[in-house]
Length: 424
Ligand SMILES: Cc1ncc(COP(=O)(O)O)c(C=O)c1O
Ligand SMILES: [Zn+2]
Image (cartoon, rainbow, N blue to C red; front, side, top):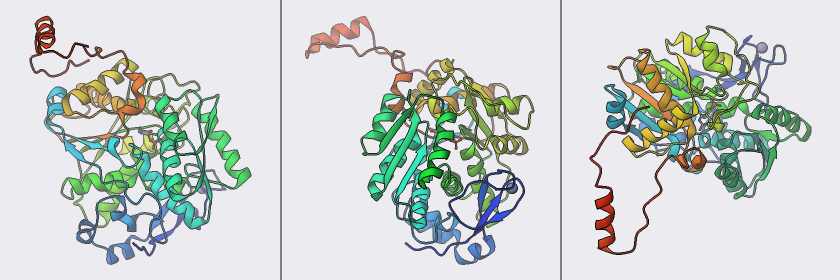
């Protein structure tokens, strides 16, 4: 699978200054984040939507819109997750149409982070790094560890020391050097910036961040293609660093620019936990810049970034697209996880609970109309955050292996009438 690159360089999102393609992530003039720029005219002449549709499933079918010079070398099987029409969830939410983009089943580590890591590590290999790393709230750690192992790269993964058990184990199992730091994600991230500089390693979300972030566009490409090459009207996205929401929208813009979908407005909605809500707080209070949350307190640990790198741009996009942002407390997050599980059979992690609960809130507020199509981005798997829902479900009944025991049990608790789960 080869790819002649259509990348024309990197550009500062603040001042527009351009940079060559290197492992750098910020503008030396104003510290603005750098973004990958493409030559869409040449790209549009050399690949068509129909050609893309005929390719193998997965994120590399959009390879011309990803920032590699050659073919991908890491994460060849990533992406291609289901877009599920969620009628039972829609009924429970009291709306006409809901789709769930289910990255809880992404390969290989069950979150959308496999997309960003496939791109970042393929790029790291192009740059010649043999050691890679990340600062992570958990899912990125899992994905860097797994994909680095499969690619034969050394990996150093830095996480807050108090993450969920499965997020820690889901990194150490791959042989990565996992370092728990007694501090918040923002402290971990600052430390990693120093580490990347001192040792010259490729940190996927630091010096490789412009390339890493492009991987998230493939969520947007897939949604549009799975809808039959058209754009949805409303999209709800969980936010931590605030990168994913912007890249899903960038994907929609690129598809319109290439003429692969018709022009149509897409409103973007950001979802956060109340215990770490810098972006939703800024949007609600009509402030351009967010106020960092110093000590995040939420069960949605994957979203607990108090000082999001792309917070400013996420807020701006949300406002300009006609969307909104909200946050929900831990009880609502658990109820959101349950609602999705019981209506659609999808067990999402806490970030998914945030997304469902925020969607519900926005619908109730009248911010998302009930008669227009809504896509919910479910980005991680519930098996990784079991602590969050432990104790909320009844323990299974334990019986002797006899039919009498079943009869007795059902006499005590008759079969339930099929019902919609209770709404919070
Ligand atoms: C499951 C999950 N969803 C969403 C996000 C948010 O992504 P971003 O940092 O790009 O806003 C994260 C980030 O860690 C995550 O782990
Ligand atoms: Zn700049």
